[in-house]
Image (cartoon, rainbow, N blue to C red; front, side):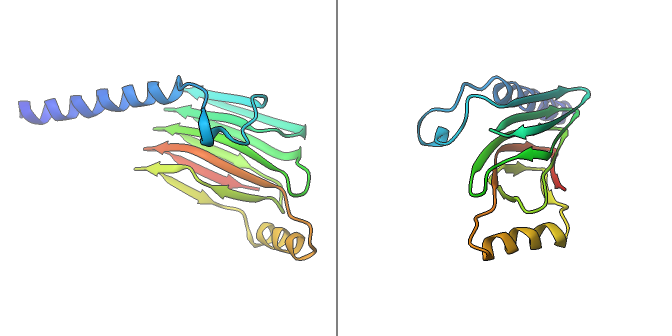
Length: 157
């Protein structure tokens, strides 16, 4: 019984330390930082919930949730055709929701570890992006980087 408790305590402490390291991470350097903007939205929730909506030009964001939830609403934001913006995501025992306009392409490169990434946009959103591409105009693209640890990332429109 004592051995089992020691293992549980180890994983709890390990998870907390990992979350803290990811939250206070240094700005990315090298090839992974290419295309990332220093300006952008910041949204972080710990043991609570947070929402942020934006309209006007969108340049990127950092969104995090630790034992809470964060919602970033980009449905009224603008991104030029063919332009790409990066959103860094961290969800630890929590969830992040990102709402994007129909017709935007979302490229998910976030790493789920005992978590999940789901795209709840309907057929209409995928059709709008395909039609824009077929007309020769590349649709705006959002690239999601980060980690989902025991949590969830939901993409919606």
